[in-house]
Amino acid sequence: MVKILGTNLQAADQVALLRTLGLLLQIGLTLFAADTFGLSLQMEPLVHVFVLEVLYLSLTLALRKPLFAKERGLFIALSLDTLFWISWLYFSGGATNAFISLLLLPIALAAVTLPIWAPWSLTAISTLAYSLMIFTVPESQMHHHGMDMSSHYLGMWFNFVISALVLTTSVALIAKRMRRQDAQLAYMREGQLRQEQLLALGTVSAQMAHQLATPLSTLRLLLDELREEQPEPSVTVVEMETALGRCEHTLTELRLATESIRDRRQRPQKITELVAGLKQKTQLLMPQTELNWLITCAPKQLEEQQILTDMSLTPAIMALIENAARASAETLGVAQVDISLDSAPSEGQIYLQIRDYGAGIAPSLLPQLGTLLIESPKGLGVALLLSHASLERLGAELILANHPQGGTVAQIRFTLLQPNASATTTEAL
Image 1 (cartoon, rainbow, N blue to C red):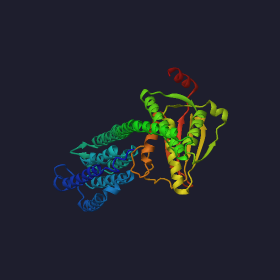
Image 2 (cartoon, rainbow, N blue to C red):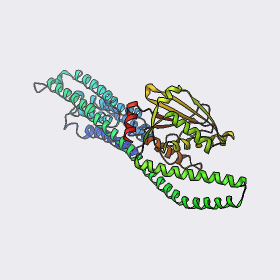
Image 3 (tube, rainbow, N blue to C red):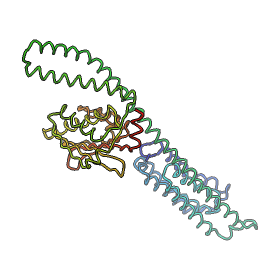
């Protein structure tokens, strides 16, 4: 929900200006235009009303930023404005006051800036007050120069009700639609910014990968020559070959993933295949990590479930597991990660949860991680941004939260493919 006045001081200033002009209009009509417009003034109570209204308006203007930070604060202010307008109208002619329609001003402000319940509430208050003022009009004022003015005042009341209803329906709905469009535009701008950041990261990654290909090939040649010179390779050579093999394997996967994303090669994959691939990857690339798998789904049920994947899915999940292992190692001294898999067939989803035993994430950063680049010496923001983008492209959802017993939980919600959809996707590929 978009807070129109919460963070927009300019809007609060505009509302304050309109309320100030309303007070100046009351004072001007009372002092300079009462005879012109036939206002029946009761000066003593009006002076008290003006003194209270000036004090109240000065206080609300001074506190407008915290007061208008919430919808309730603005509604209370407009409600009190309505009561002051009613008081001024009552002591300056009541229902016979030609400016009775100024009661619509707080309703209009509420219709534009607040949810629809606010203008309806002010309309009810104003209509009730107007109705009571009509019933309290002296009989002498109902007849003017021998004419019965009751029908005229009733027509004014009916016109006021119609105008208030227009404000509380048409104007309020239009304002609500505009706020929804503004929220959609803001979301689209954030998405465009995120895509620009991802494009920049992808371009840099492709350039770096291309630059790494040549020195890795040179290292492979040097390592082969070293193995030929040593009949029995030393431990150092074996470790170097293992590390070099991992680098070459990663570059190959990066190239395949790039081609897959470019050509939009998406395919259905069984959950069992995904889990087996993750187990194999973690054993190969993270042998020192203590992984605790908890699969609550029935094996037969798990065998039948499929999700939409491409070459970027496994690296995205691996990045989350590596972050979790790093966070646990920093806190416990042991890279311990819990991975659980739970299915919700009735909702058409399956949940993969990755929990670490680290220090957790600051609550202020939770809404930003995965959607914006966050400055962090650990590089957590970039990894989550890339993982979030990969999962989002596949129709999955990444949710981050702090675990009640410590650490962080990254939950991935996959949408299960229907059997018909899986067959259609396979035929298309």
